[in-house]
Image 1 (cartoon, one colour):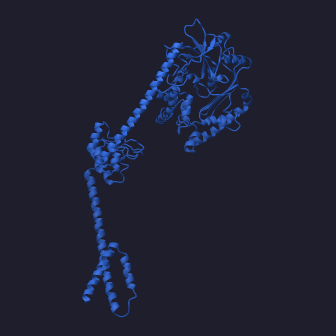
Image 2 (cartoon, one colour; image 1 turned 60 degrees about the horizontal axis):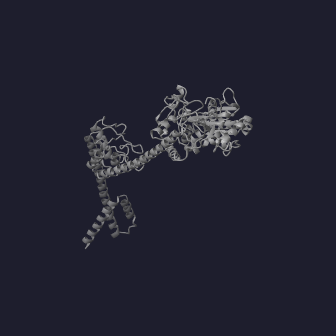
Image 3 (spheres, rainbow, N blue to C red; image 1 turned 30 degrees about the vertical axis):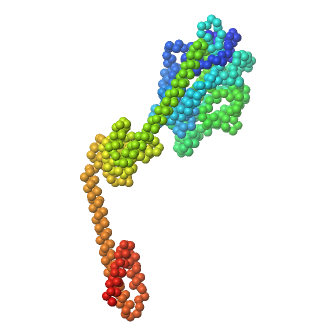
Length: 600
C-alpha cells in the first residue's frame, strides 16, 4: 500500500493496475475520511478520536485550533447541529449556501469569521433549517435507491490472496469522460493518455465576493504527484456581502427593492466590478480554456451561476461535456483551496472493508432509514394531533368567554393543565384576539376583563399584531378603567404594567367619582339645552301671536296684506328645531279652533 501513496490516479504502477478488479456492488457511505474511507496511506485508527474532524458536518480538515474555533462559530456548523438534533443527515457547505441563497435575508455563512450568534442570526438559521427540510425528504427517498449510482466514486478491489481484509481503491468519476461508468480499461487508457498528454484542468470558484481560478496540468511531479503544474491562477475579492444579514446585495434588491444607502450602493458597484473582473479573466485565458480537458466550477445560486453562463460572450456553456462540479465539500474560494481540491480529485481513496462489513453496513443503513422514516411520520402525526387539540381548546375557551362563564372557563383550564394566557390556535385566524384577555377586551366585557386580570391573565401579552389588551381597548372607557383599577388594587409588582402600556393606577372610588362627575356634567348640559329650547319656543309663540293679531286687523280693516309678514313668520319658524315647529303648529291650530268657536 505504500507504493500507492506515491502516485495519483493517473500514475499508478503497472503491478497495482494489474491487480485491480471493478467492484460494482461495493457501496460505501461517504461520511468522513477519518473513518473506513481515507486518503492515500492515511488510515486512521477507529479507536482514536480525530480532533481535526467535525462529526456534525462530516469533515476532517480542521488541522489548527483557530480553524476548529472558526468552524464551530460558523452558520454552517450551527445549521448542521440543528439537523443532527432532528436526526437529519448533514448538508455540505455548497448545499448550505444554496439553501440560504434565496432567503429574503440570508445568512452571513462561512464567509464571515467573526459572526456573532445574535437573535437575528438564530432567526435566519431557523428559516434556513425549515427550508432545508425538503432536502431531508429528498435524501430519505434517495436512501432507498442504489447508492452506487449516486456516489461520485468508482471502487476497485486490489486482489491480494495473502490479505485477510480486502483493500479497495476509489477514484472520482468526475475525472473521466463519460463519468457514469468507469472501468478498469478506461482507467488504464486514461493513464496511457496522460503520459503522452498530461490532463489539463480549469477550476473556478465564486461566492460571497470571493473568486478563485486556476488552470493546471497533471504533469508528473517527482517531489509530490498530488501537486499540479499551475499554468495560470487568479484570485479576486470584492465587498459584496451584506454584513450580519449576509447574502448578496442583488438578492436583497430582488426581494425588497433597491435600498438607497452608502453601503448598498458600494455593494452594487462591487458586484458589477466583480463580474467585469471575471469576464476579463475569461478573455485573457481564452486559448488556455480551449485546451482544457475538464472544467470544474463551483457557483452556488442563480446570481453566481449567471456570471459563468449568462453573460454576453460567455466562454463556458452549461451544456459543455467538459463541465464538472466539485463532488465534495469546498470552502472559501482561494488559491490554496483550489490546490486542495485538485489533490482531493487525483488522490486514490483507500478503504479496508470486507464483504461481511459491507452487507452489515447496508443492513444498518436500511434499518436507520426505516427508523428515521418512522420518526418523521410519528413526528408529523404528533404535530397533527397537537394542532387538533389546540384548536379544540380554543373553541371551548372562546365559547365559555362568550357566555361570560368565568367559572367554567377556569375549571376547563385546570382540568386540561392550560395557562390562563393560552394562545389561541390557529394563530393566523386569531391575530387580533390571541389570548383570553384580548378576546374579553374585544367583547367590551368589563366585568370579564376584571376577573381575568385578578386570576392572573397577563396584560403584557401581545397579540398577532403586536398589541397589548390595553392598546386594543381604546373604544370602551369601562374596559380601560378596569385595567387602571387592577393596577391600583393588584400593585405594581403583580404585572409589568409598563410593558402592558397601561395608564396610571386609579382606585375604584376615583373612577366612580370621575364617572359621576361626567354623568352630572352631561345631565347639566341636557337641562341647559332644554331650557334654551323652551325659551326660544316661548319667544317664537309670542311673536306668532302678535303677528296673527296684526294680520287679523289688517284682514278686516283697510287694504289687504301682501304676505310679507307671513314670510317673516315662516323665516322665524325655519330657525327653530323640527320638534319646536311641530309644537307651534299644534298650538296655532288649537288657537284657531278656539277663535272659531268664540265667533259662533
